[in-house]
Every structure is written in C-alpha cells, then in structure tokens.
Amino acid sequence: MRIVFFGAPGSGKGTQSKRIGQQLGIPQLSTGDMLRDAIKAKTDLGAKASEYMDQGQLVPDQLILGLIEDRMTHEDCAKGYILDGFPRNLAQAKELDVMLTEKGNRLEKVIFLDIDPAKVVARLVDRRVCETCGAEFHLENHPSKTEGICDQCQGSLIRRPDDHEGKIKVRLDSYVQLTAPMDQYYQSQGILAHVAAEGEISEITERILKSLTVD
Ligand code: AMP
Image (cartoon, rainbow, N blue to C red; front, side, top):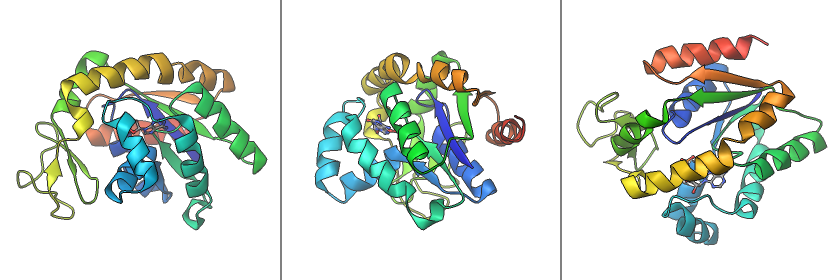
C-alpha cells in the first residue's frame, strides 16, 4: 500500500496518517517531521530548511526529494507507506511518479482531507505538539491529560513556531497556490478520494479506512 495524504494545513494529516499507518502496519513518512528532526540535530539540511519553515514557506524541492527518496528505501517501507506532507506541489508529485515507476511501483491511493478553510486557523493556533515524540494535541478538541505534558512520553508540549497567525496565513496561501492543484493531477489518475475531515478523530479515521477499501 503506497498512500499519499494531503490537505490544507490543520486538516489533520499528521494525526490521521499516524493512526492509519498503525492500523495498516505501514510507516507514516512525514517530511515535516523529518525536517524538524534535521533542525533539532543541527544538520546543514536543517539549517537551510529552517530559513523557509520559520516563514511558513515551502522548502525548495531539491532539499526534499533526496530526503524522501532515501527514506523510502528503508526496510520498514517494503510493504508500503503513507506519505504525509509530500508531495506538496505538482513538480514533487511528478517527481514521485518518476521515482516509483523506476522501481516498478505506483501509488495506490491519494487521500484528500477536506476541511472548511475558515476552521483551519482555530485548529492550528490551539494545536500543541510534543517536543520529544511529535504527538499532537489540541487545547479544546484533544487536550492532553496534564496541561503542557505529552500523554505518550511525558515530553513538553509546545506551539510550533509556524502555528502563529502570520505564518499560518503564508502557509494557507502557499497551500492554495501550490498544493491544492495536485487535486486535479490525482483526480485524472483515478486514485483520489475526498474525505470529510471534520468531526471526531475516530470518525474521520473510519471514513479514511472505508475509502481505502473501495476502489
Ligand atoms: P508540515 O509538518 O507537513 O506542516 O510541514 C511543516 C513545514 O515543513 C512546511 O510548512 C514546509 O516549510 C516544510 N515542508 C514539509 N514538507 C514539505 C515538502 N514536501 N515540500 C516543501 N516543504 C515542505
């Protein structure tokens, strides 16, 4: 199973792709998490990426493509994977098709998480993420048991630097201009499924699982 998740910032890609990955027994490959790890590890890639990420802008394609291509060759990807946050524009989508075709593979499904753009800002400003394990919480919809502390690993919960209003606007603009056009691309390949991304987290997971089992 090779699956792509895409949708606006705040549509729940990270949360849902982790849950679906666990259910299907395949890894969730998040380019955002990989870049944040590179920043934490103070690598050259991390230094270059943070210049863009801190502004809410997409990182240049050439920094992303090698990173994801390398990750897809790891042993845990043999049965498939969920791509979360990649591809993020048409050039990356086309490049992914080339990478897969070279290996005799193809994408099975692209899940588009559909959310009213007016709801996205509220989701993001109140999002909190664990500094240690990356688990996501929300102050209202999905609070941690102890304020500021991760339920899973007891790490500290922080607000992502790009989850502040000004940066959210830049991310939304970039989503509309660069990421949303992938909808047409995958529609024409006949592998796109739209899933309503509003409601209880578990209900959304069920909807996604259903859309993965129907052709
Ligand atoms: P995310 O965790 O998916 O919200 O990504 C956080 C940030 O990482 C984005 O705003 C971009 O700056 C960068 N990023 C993640 N994935 C990509 C990608 N495929 N292409 C370019 N930039 C990316």
